[in-house]
Image (cartoon, rainbow over all chains, first blue to last red; front, side, top):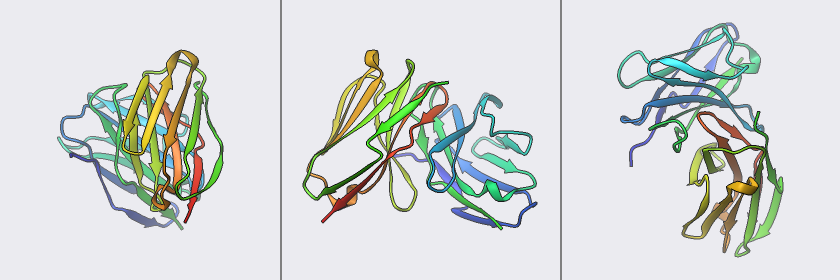
Length: 113
Length: 106
C-alpha cells in the first residue's frame, strides 16, 4: 500500500536556526497537509496545500513558517529562526481530494535546544 | 470553529475486555477519521467514517452524522491496543480531539 514518507525521523536544531522538514506524499494525491503535536497534547492543523498554493492555514502558521513543493514528489515545511516552543512532532499528510481520508507519515520529531 | 470532544479521557482495562470510545463534534463534517497513536508516536489510520458503520477485525466504528457523534468499539482487547485514540473531523483540515488514553493490562 502506498504511504507518506517523512525525513528525517528526528531533527535536533539550535534555537534561531532554520530547519526544513521533508515529506513525500502519495503519488496520485492532490492535497497536502502539515500538522504538529506538542508532546502530550492534541494534534493541531498547520497548513493545507493544493495546486501549488496554500489553501488554508491556521493561526499557528505565521511568517516563521513556509511550505513548498519544489518538484513533483517532495513537499517541505520550512521553519525560520526556530524557537524553543517549536519543539514538537510534525506530521505530513496527503489526500486525493479535500474531504477524502488523509494518510499520515510517521512524523518528524523536532527538538530545539 | 468546530469543537471535538472525546470521552473518556483515560481508560484502563484488563486484556480481553471490550470498550467504547466516544467522539462528539459541534458541526456537520465531510470527514471523520479515527486514529491510534502508538507508543512510538505513529498515527495509525483506523477508520474513515463520516457516516455509517464499518468493521475491521476486532474494531468497529459508527458515526451518526445527524446527531454529531461517533463511537469506536474495541472488542477482546489486547495489550497491543494500548495507546491514545484520536478522533479527527473536518473538511479540508482536520480538527482533533484530545484523545482517549487506553491502557490494557495483561
